[in-house]
Length: 114
Length: 112
Image 1 (cartoon, chains in turn cyan, brown):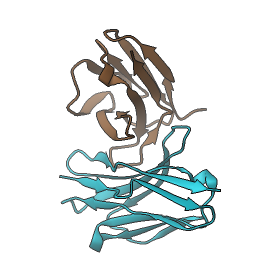
Image 2 (cartoon, rainbow over the protein chains, first blue to last red):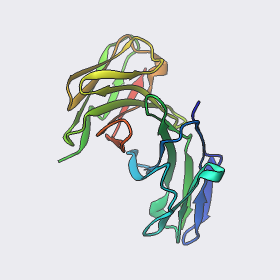
Image 3 (cartoon, one colour):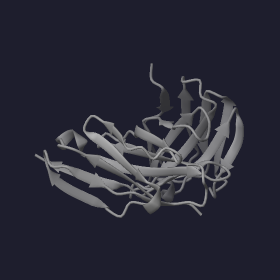
Image 4 (tube, each protein chain N blue to C red):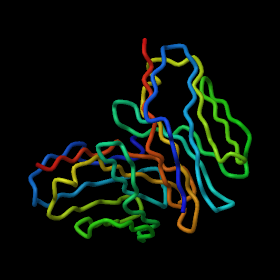
């Protein structure tokens, strides 16, 4: 069975601090995909990144970076120099298996304090 | 030029009523989905259609019935609404099941 664990339910940091959101996944598939989505207070779900299981290169996009480590089944997300607009719930997700269904983690609520 | 749109955005109704939520995507995607997000923000897939064909049907009460008239539309009809159906329902679409899913703005359903 596939599983995504986001152990941090809620995190608060002061603006300009760096923050890392953890994501640990479980799967028996050799081919799978990992995602991060952002859900700001307005409620929409915004796609951030997709990574396939064969690509372990880390990714950087502006202040956002992602660290994928198959050895520890983790796909962590770091925000550098956080801003108040980064306040949101962040979801890690995994797709794979016979039906490629996406399984979402329970989300991490991030508060960036001014 | 919204990519994935849902109507209505808000839906307040009485227990026992029947209601529908509509979803349309203009991305040309082949696959569409319905998700339910509960009050604790937990997101769970309900249904998935590929080119109008049902491919994922999670353990959802049969009061929920999806309908896909064409690959750009996936509607959700709910019969005999119950208090526990109150949630945010998201529609999404993607090129295929392995590709990135793009979500609609959500429909906030409140059953009184």
